[in-house]
Image (cartoon, rainbow, N blue to C red; front, side, top):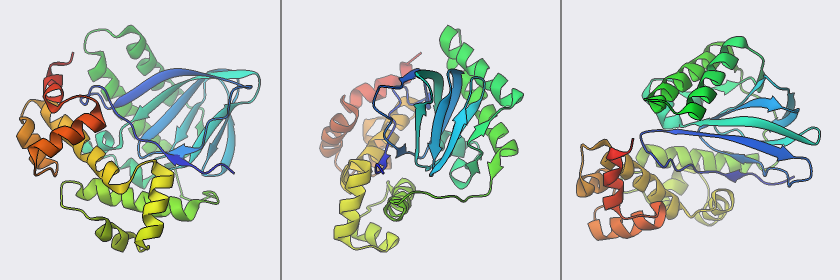
Length: 275
């Protein structure tokens, strides 16, 4: 079995916490590596049959059906025949939480065939393809409607096989939740190890293996993403955003921000003018 990897998402526009694209997966291409993330992912199959895996459960989805990958579930997809095509929509967990929809606490049916869910997804596809005036605002509203529809009609009782690497996955998931809740505080690796109940050597090794990042690197990623959102809001300047995100040195913040985001913080502050 392939061990799963943790996937982080960077949104070019911090005010648009949505990832959307059309994927075509061919039979002879490498299989998708099982991965997981805290955001909610929904696939809308448009051509060919798609085999999906979610926490060890295998399901097939046909055109017109929607696949729901719950927050923190280990998942992957592959075509059943020669190829399959589907839209992929990833909705940020923090966005859902901000509207009182705690997707991290729910698990969903893996494949659904529902006219309301399908119509809402199709409306998102149309908005993203046409990109008319205020399309981002409409997509956010439709995405929230889609998530609420899933919560109302397709929440299921947690269960199922979560794979042979579940022990370390659950440990890392617990650590990620703690870091997201306390990133603005002076968190230490020792504190985190105490929280998850594992030795420092084992925890740091497995955290890096699953996320591809060290604890400090991931903590800096969270802090920089938060600072970027604050600057993009237009309500806070660079130094205020850095301090509110857990940085106490502006020069260190600038170095870390450039490494994590790829630009200087001043560019992040200018993102409030994005269309």
